[in-house]
Image 1 (cartoon, rainbow, N blue to C red):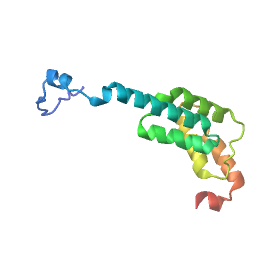
Image 2 (cartoon, rainbow, N blue to C red):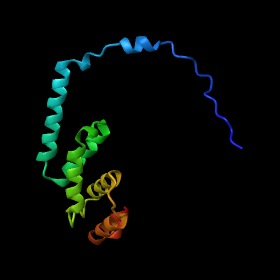
Image 3 (tube, rainbow, N blue to C red):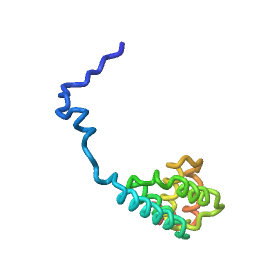
Image 4 (tube, helix red, strand yellow):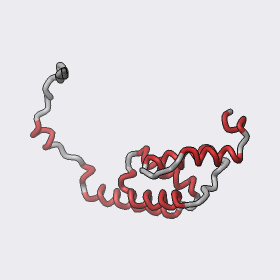
Length: 132
């Protein structure tokens, strides 16, 4: 027996559809479009120029948090592919970098085991340092 859910006591919008469609945004003008493309190209160059894998992961994380990572899908995929295919990620002793790598690879659909990272961390850190 399914219960029907109502929409509650929502009031109709005071704004007419035609009015909303008539609003202009100055950010759709040609000058803003050109500036946006220049900024996107600068970020693409930043992604390509960064050689340190931890900094690459941090940059990807920042772009995701800003909500603009979809503009750089191909570049991000390329970077994550390179990191994923590396035999050893050279941050065994850095819990932050390992956690960031693990989270980003998992978010982007890579098949990565949590056990691998924990084993690599435990081999270089004592149990006390790992948990406290």
